[in-house]
Length: 171
Image (cartoon, rainbow, N blue to C red):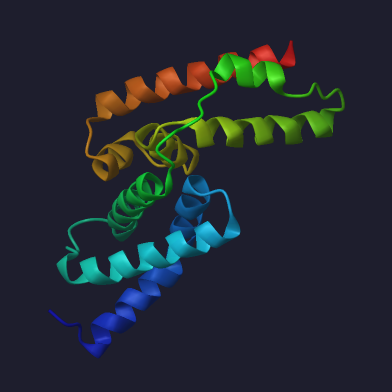
């Protein structure tokens, strides 16, 4: 199924309007600029391929997030080494340097948060990224294909885990 010139133009306008989604997902699932570029291109390709099946009954950004996250998770699985080195969150918190300056401490907390997010499994990483993007529980549930109750439960557990790790770091 090919697109008309008008449909292509609408697609490109929508992609331009929501391009931040692609950047956020690519940054959340990769660690190097080259990988971010590769993942962004793969997401764009899959969005283009899927667009003829897009239904205007759904929010475009929700549809776009769902595809972007599925592509990112597949990308992560393809590019992750078979032997993974895992570090318990408690160990990570102990290894991080202690910052005493307020501004430096805020920067360090953000860096710790990024490292913790990078250590999450793909579903929890997607969940947290969507939450940090101020998506409603309903939107998150729709994007990830889980229930709103499951979203609330998982987010509560994730936030508590992150809170405990950050608190241990401050001690």
